[in-house]
Every structure is written in C-alpha cells, then in structure tokens.
Image 1 (cartoon, helix red, strand yellow):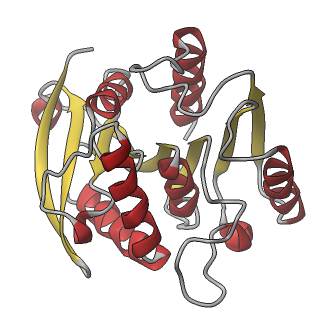
Image 2 (spheres, one colour; image 1 turned 120 degrees about the vertical axis):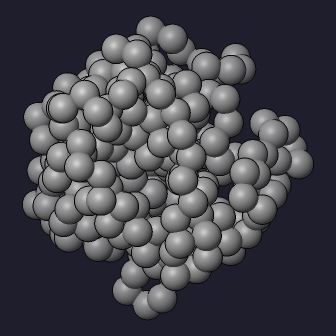
Image 3 (cartoon, one colour; image 1 turned 180 degrees about the horizontal axis):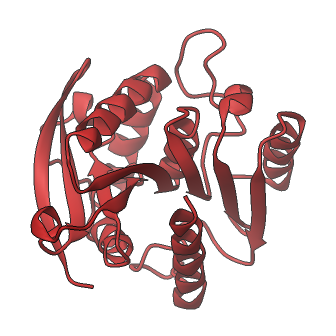
Length: 247
C-alpha cells in the first residue's frame, strides 16, 4: 500500500527527540486502525537505508516510528555518514548514553501512539545492529507484544553504560511478548560464544523466542555496501511482517 511520512518532536526526560513517522496513506482519515512498530536504527541514526526499511514495514499496514536514538548528544536531524568519522561518533554516542534513557524514550513513544486514534494498542519493536539491542531493550516493556532483533550488538557483552542491575540481557525475564533473534554467522561483532550466551540466558529466563543464524555478514539488511544480501533481507522482512501481524 502507499504510505506517507512525517516528523514529530517528542519531549523526553532527557530532552527533545525527533521521531520519523511512516504510515499508510491517509491513515488518520481512512476509518481503519493499524498496529505500530518502534523501529531502531544503527549508530548512524536515520540514514537512507533505515528510511527505506521503515517504509517497507509501513507499506504492509503498520504505523512505524523511527527515533533518533542519540537525540541527547546531537542536534535534531543528525545523520552520521557510513565512514570512519561517522562510525567513531556513533560509537562514542553509544558508549555515552545510559541504557535507562532508552527506556524513557520508549515510554514517550508508546504514550504518543496512544494519542493517535488510528493506532491499535498492539505495538512491536524491531531494530538492526545497536538497534537490535534497543529493540530487545524495548521488549522489557510489557506494552511491546512482539520483537524482531537483527544482529543485536553489545547485548552479550554487558558493556553499555547503565546503573547496577540494568544491563539488558540480565533483564531478559522481563520480556513478555514473542521474541525473534537473527544473527549473521560471519558477523565479527558477535562471536559464537556471545550468541550462545544470549541463547542460554533467554532459555533460562523462559522467554518465548525463535532463533535464526544465517550465513551472512554484519549489516546484511543494509541496502548499501558489499555486505548487503537482498534475498536474505527479503526473507527477514517477510518473517518480521508475519510476526507483527500476529500481535
């Protein structure tokens, strides 16, 4: 279906956050209601590949919100380049922002969705790279009914800044919705031992989850660069849409 895009600035406890909104065309006046997806970017924020991914999801009948994940640390509208400078800045931001700040960001987006009469109560989460971690983080909120995490970085290492007892993986038992974890076997950022740690933690926490390890590099969903795998990306979009339609 055709879609439309807009932007909204939401006020969070840590400052204004620009959010990109994708939804079916004329959703507000169509007389229909749609489930929603919180979609989390890589460290580079909303690049062109991220925007295209959000558009693909929205075109299947979802209201998709893409937050600027490091809004406290950059001017609104910041997009980092896929180069060394952009990578260094994005990683610096990742090591600076406490995990608890993403929790308050998520709650603000959930509260915003409740103000939209054409959005159903069912909300899912999806993300790539650090966004895969942040989607997992969002799943700790009981309002998130289904989550699709792609090559989630820093989940196994417990190294992102946070208060005591607030590392994301350690709170896996808080997840109430369905969870899907997707990994690339050739991803240098998450070792086999790291993946096994995540699998074991989810199993011990009795989370309802599905698990896929693909013959793919890190960032295989990004439709720019040599690591892109179009066939595998299509497969994952289809799986994600099927998951969210079951919410």
